[in-house]
Length: 356
Ligand code: GTQ
Image (tube, rainbow, N blue to C red; front, side, top):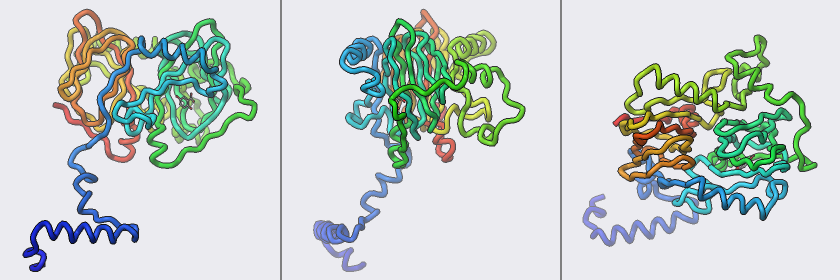
């Protein structure tokens, strides 16, 4: 080492560079050149803070509706691409977001895939998602789930278009190279197997079958696939009436799997929040990047010092470990739906928060 210590710095760099070149054909690379970038003290994310407005997207989605049918497209969706990840079909490093349009009379054919999906209804009433041949009719601000490997199709037997936000774990599954999918041969819907709304009644009323099948008891696949707006909205209203807001969350509830009380799906967590008029939350960081949909009201979101105005219909993404702070305007409560990969991170003992 004495010789190396006496070697001029420029020569050392040249010696190393030449060594690195000779490593390449052996499928080798020096860790010490990349270690600090790989094992960072806190998350280094490529995800940028960004906002989309429903009023901007809606006419473009309606235009897509004139250019391609749901059957042709399979899913007629405009992807919300993170501006720092253009071309990569993702809103964060693990999550996908898109706005899907289904016009009156259309069917989005049945398929199933290993990706988990949630739908959050942005506009329209009465179109359905069917899981394994059981329809759930969807209304504005309902949350609907299509957990991994369940056959699902969408249809609209009403006279108005329906638009919902799709939230999927597509990039996460892509990073695991674990995508599998199947499509119905006839490119149609699944035949109806159970009455519409059955799961909501069976699993959404604080009851569960006294004899659950092993698969049900395992809780791996959430049998409840619709969470109506009236229900979650009422809960937030009661919380507001009955307790003081939490300094960092105001009023925040997580949607749960009724079998085990855990996250709605294996990889994705979903939340409903209410910030009372005039209230500002204290800043916090969480290791899960978060997508928020503004359901009611207006206000602002401050992300690492950057202020975004929020209006009803806005969709925003907050990068992992960014400091975030929500303020409701003085005029009205701010109500949000949010989803993130918290469920994944918790399973891997990764999830963290810092209350600032
Ligand atoms: O509705 O099944 O936005 O499979 C992307 C992939 C929606 C769906 C998306 C999908 C779906």
